[in-house]
Amino acid sequence: MRKLLNEELKRLTIESFKSAVKLPVVVILDNVRSLNNIGSVFRSSDAFRVEAIYLCGITARPPHKDIHKTALGATESVRWVYFENTLDAVGELKSDGYEIFAIEQTEESIMLEEMEISGGKKYALIFGHEMRGVDQDVVDAAEKSIEIPQFGTKHSLNISVSAGVVLWEFYRKIGGVINP
Amino acid sequence: MRKLLNEELKRLTIESFKSAVKLPVVVILDNVRSLNNIGSVFRSSDAFRVEAIYLCGITARPPHKDIHKTALGATESVRWVYFENTLDAVGELKSDGYEIFAIEQTEESIMLEEMEISGGKKYALIFGHEMRGVDQDVVDAAEKSIEIPQFGTKHSLNISVSAGVVLWEFYRKIGGVINP
Image: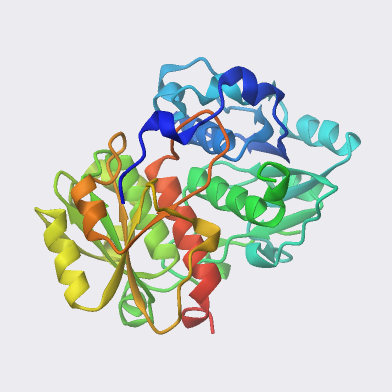
């Protein structure tokens, strides 16, 4: 099983990424503290070709050398926007017709494998602060909360891992749009 | 949608984790450089209750404060072993009946969503170095290579994200064992 060379992977150029069909998903980062996590979310968003990342509140913005360390250039391909207030980002996306999912453990959360999504719709996924999660007022503004089921001793996954897992689940369900 | 408090999540204690039924999966880290990634893999392995993590080669071992920063205690719940040579870890697991999957992009790799796994078997998943991936001689020792399909400009996902995504896919396929 010979490993493929980077050039054999036939990835997109930054220009072709920008004009390519996207997974109909916007990632919202609600006060994410770690530059490492922000960079890693950019990299996963590039891989699953999401529409945009909305960086909110204390979430740092590129260019930043510590974001670059994990993003490795994905801040050049994936579109991003900054909002001081996460609720403004949610409001804008709602009025643009996006269905809003908070990735959070709530009284009403739906387990990720049971999440129902459909091909014709657009989705925005909110990931929150490393310790506090998504703020309660932002959860209240979302239509649904989605939970990644967990079976160990810790309360949550790392936020960049959560984003990767949820984006993978979206790809699994509606990935035909980017992989026809 | 009220957010749940940590105590409402009813996570396992370290003692109950140790005796609980596990996902029949061992994670092998083949020369993983970043302490942040190692810690994050511990945390995901705790969440999906894997059997063990085999730390190989230059992969650092707990206790280490920079592993702790992302593992947040998961080094206490998840069993781990150190091997100087990754091939020795693979050899031991093979003779114990594990099927070995290298997570790597090769001429023969199987896309993650098409990976076939079955309930009665045991699996070992090899994740490699941040830049070099899984070494070719280790890939050669594996039975299959599994690839996470990607559609952007970058060549790979962060290794802790890859581990989270692959463990989630295992949970999706054979999670009934830990979530009856």
